[in-house]
Length: 501
Image (cartoon, rainbow, N blue to C red; front, side):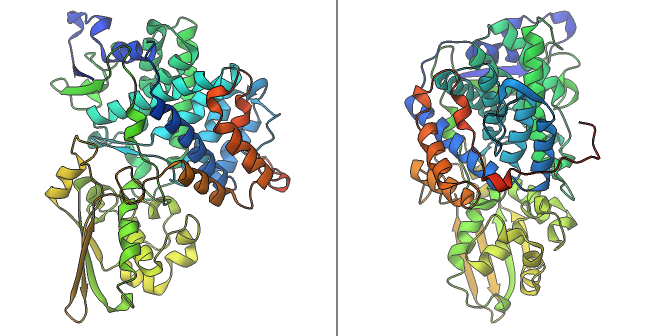
């Protein structure tokens, strides 16, 4: 791996392309690096994972809206849309929009946390949609996805967006553009322009994840994917982009991030070095923000030790800075304590999540978020007793550069009304690669079967699982097999008349 130093230069410096971060990312996107076997297998796992959570969310309103918009843009030999008959095809950018929204809606797919946050699986819908429309092979798709993960993970390691209240999709735009460059076997110059255009058009504020969180949280990554597809198309037609997008005098770093004097270090593999960043990412066993995963596991185990939660006086959660500030009381969002808050807000409230998991001893992607559940009297009482604190030890573990030492959990102190205490801690979720029960292929398959039961016919479920595991041998024009059709009664829909498309 190389450590790429990135800083702002005055326009008079005339920084060479070869010295720009976007060019260096384009170089590895256009190289001929061998594919790592474990990374290839993980791509298949994540396609299964994405399909599972997408199908499970298919009847939710944001997903229905995105799907309706896509259905208004049919295209012969285009891309498929999750749930819909695979013989129906749509413009790839709109299929990416619909599928990306479906994947993101339940906050239930993979994650990578470092200097910033990310859901690298968001790369898959746009790259797959373009691969389908361009009649590419399974190995083409694999190469594109591996590159998308590589770029996003390494940007997340090197550049913090959250500090400046910029949404993490600003790293997704460039990673999708790079992944599409690998998929389409574009030259370095074209990918370079694509990456810059994609970054320029996908910068947005983090208000989408603050306060009363709306459905835009589900749309945001699919919006970035759609814009990245359009950026690549423009670059393929020979169009240029704002340059240098990272290092320029009026660039993203200079005026959106840490300013003209800032210095960043972004790790990247050497040209023709295997891309293995996807192996550092991790999926979710539970439908909630990733920093809540270990806390759900911990609450689930503590449920067996506490017979009656009404005997609890107060609960202290000691955790990392990020967890405290983003999903804890340190966020200072009153909505995180509101029983009538949106699902999107509740899955970003560790106080709510820990209370429900502690009471129920389990977690469910639907039942744990219903209005009846959030308004349960005992839950509200317990919820109000929970407060989070930053613990510098856990902050240090959160940012540990060694993936095997990195932790996203913390320590809990439960103080009972009789004066006794229960203390416990958990560093990583059970399903994490270094956890008690790391996810393997069988777990991804089981997650798919569980989430799609009663939504997908058994024959279709088995067909998809067989085809996706044969991805390496999938020839051109076969990628439509990665779509999953729901039962015929669920394919019926009414398009809103109150719309433009």
